[in-house]
Length: 356
Image (cartoon, rainbow, N blue to C red):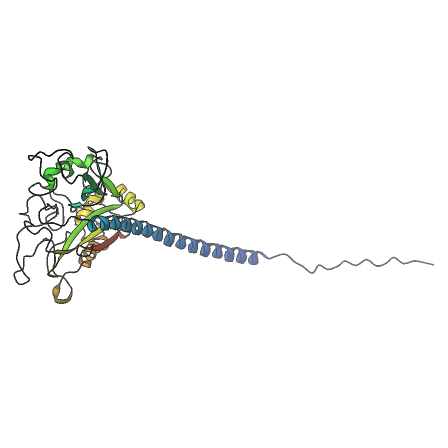
């Protein structure tokens, strides 16, 4: 019997490899997907970074305004005490704005200053303990040589109600410490001496990212002005100073500040040593003039509008010099990165002196 071998057949493979074209298409699609995801992540990171910057500036502005609200709420409002506030140029020692317009001139300070007596706790070095009465002041450190620069500072100098020793009945004892004719600059000359910018014991930094500070008055006549008394005969009794009235004509004080986040500050400082100073100088002072409201009345938001116009317009895209592309500069031609300027936030709060 002859046994035939079982026939061996070669099994066909049902699978096959990818072609080169298919591999190229797959790689291309994968690269496109990765690129889209990267762009989405980058966009999300940018949005998140901007949001974090705004949160930082919002938080700082709220902290500063809350501190001011406490100080204004406890303000000693009397006609026989002194106030260090801005007013007309003939109100000696009290006008601190830079010519009520743009550009700081030699010898001037860029931002306003304000000082008043308040029944808030302060530190009195001579007593060695907190006092129930303070001389409160706010200013921007405008010094170009001191550090930190362009930051909002607050002074809370502790006082006592009467300057005489508690156990003394001497009829020749000094008058109560804060009543006229004593004035604030006389009582605390170091607080308003430009050299005190380098003296950290006088002021403390309360707004490290606040680089511009301006305020105005809402009078009881309804007028918004940079003069703290009524000058309109049609609205009531006219005054020429604070003598005899104090802030009696003032209903509210509106404060406007500009806040920059640390990252944007670093970018502007890196662009030019005086860039932030020049940018702050481009931001106009409040001036009493017709506004854009009903009947051409000014609004507290007018100053915000002017400052924002500088940040997105004048300071970042002024008319170019002949033959020079001058985009991203101040009016002094110092460089300011447009992205950093646009990240600056402007805030305004009104403190009603009648209800505080």
